[in-house]
Image (cartoon, rainbow, N blue to C red; front, side, top):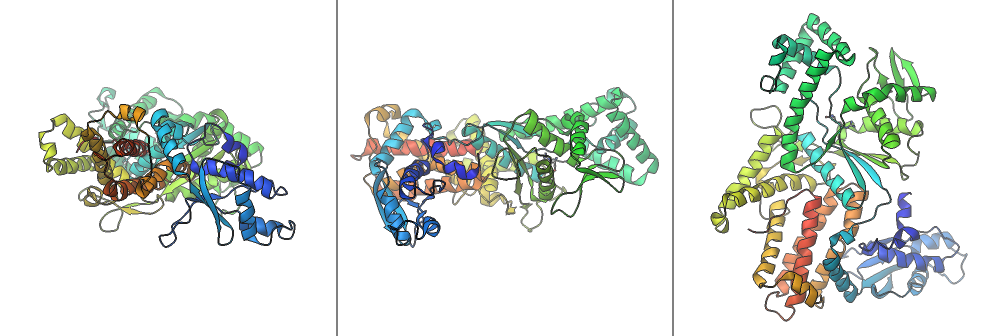
Length: 604
Ligand code: ARG
C-alpha cells in the first residue's frame, strides 16, 4: 500500500474509520471526482482543513483538485473552460451527505466546505458514548518495529538516549493507538570489542570471581573509562583484552558469565530510568542478532554485493562515497553488520512492515547505507512509499544555556536520574506554594509533582520539531504559563474541577443532554475536538510528535480563551450541552497526554 493510496476510495470506505473528518470528506470528493472526470480514475482527492487567510476563513475544509485536473484534461472535456468551472463541477457532483452544510467555489477552483453544526455535535456525542478509541486512525499496516532508547552497556545513558526514549515511546504509543502491533525494541549495545577490555580489567581488579558483584562494580562507567585508559597505554593489556574478546565470543564460561553480569548491572540501572518515565521496552540487544550475522552476510555475498577492500569486506552503494564495512579487517563484525542483520530479522522473521529507528541525526548516514543495502538485497522495495519500509527518525541535540551540548556543572555528561530528580523537586516546591496543595496528603503531592515534573521534561522535548536542537531549561519547562506541560496539565485539572463543581453526574448528563453548538466558540471547540483523529494520523504518518503537541496546545487555548471566556457553563440554560463539551475536551486532552507519555492530574 503506498502513501497516495491512503486517500483511495476503498481505504476510506473502511466502516470503522469514522474518526477522521478529512477522510470522510475525502470519500465524498472521491465519489464526485469519479463523476466529474471519468477519464482520470487515479486522481486522489486533496482535502485539507482551511487555513485562515488574514483572519477570514471561507470554510472548514477545502478540496484542492481543480487546478491539477484542469492541467491534465485541458481541451479534452468541452464543458470545462478553466479551473473554476472544474471546481463548480466537483461541487455539483458531491453526493448528498449530512456532513456538509454548504459549499462554495473560490479563486482558481477551490471547493470550500462548511461542515454541518449538527453533524459535528452528533459526532461528539457519539464519541462520548462509544469512547475515544472509536476515533483511532486506521493505518495501512499491521506491525511495526520501533527501535528506540538503545543505550550502551557499561557506558553512560546520556541525554541523547533520553530524547530517543521519549520520542520513541510517543511514536510507539501513537501507532499502538492506531491499531498497529508495535514491537518496542531496545537495541542495547551489549556486544563488541569493548567488552574484552572491560572484562580483562575487572578480572585484574577482582581476581576472585565471587567479588565481581553488583556492589563492587556498581559504577561500571568508571571501570569502563579506566579500562580504556589501560587499553590505550599498555600494549600488553591491549593484547590480553583482544584475546578476551576471542574467548568471550568463543563462549568460554568465565568470560560469558562476566559479560552477563555486566549486562545485568547496566540493565538494572536503565530500568530505573524507564520505570520513572513510564516507558516499556523489550530488549533485543546487539548480541541477539549475532548468531544470524554469518547467514545474512552469506546471502548478500551470493547476491554479489560484498567485495574485498583493504582487508575488510564491504558493500559499495550508489550515491554514497564511503563503503559500508560489514566485516572488519580483523575478521570481526561491527555496528553495520548487526544492523543489517537486525533489519533482515525484523522484515523476514518478525514480519514487520515498518521499521523505525530513533537516534540522533548523527547516525543518519549509517541508516541511509543500511537501508540502501537492504533495498539492493531485495528485502525492501526500491520505492520509499511502499511497505515494508524502514525509516530513520533523527533528532537534534539538547543544548545547555551556553548554547553548547547540555552538561551539568560537575559531570561531563548529564545523569538522567539527577535530571528527573531535579524536575520533580522543582515542581514539588512550586506545587507547595499553592494554597490548595498545602492540605494534600503527602502521597498526592508526590504523585502530582512527579506527573508534572516528568511531564514537563517530556513535553519540552516533544513540542519542538525533533530535527531542531533545543535548549534544556528548567525554568522555562516548569513555567505554568505558555506552551508547557504544566500549563496544559493545570488546564485539564481546571476543566475537571468545572465538571465536579457543577455537582452533576456526568454519566447522567451524557444520557440526558444533547450537545448544541449554537455559539461560534462552541462550534470552534467542537470542530477542533473532531480533528483529533486526523492529527494523530498525521503525527504517525510523518513521525512527528510535535504535531500532536501543537494540537493539544491549541485545544487548550480554544477552550480557555474562546469557549470558557465567552460561554457560561454552570447555571446557564445550555449547562448540559456545555458540560458535555467540557467532558469531551478533558477526554481528548487526556488521550493526548497518554500518547505523549504524560500522566494527567485532576486537581490543582
Ligand atoms: N546503541 C546506539 C547508540 O547509543 C543506538 C542504537 C540504535 N539502534 C540501532 N539499531 N542501531 O548510539
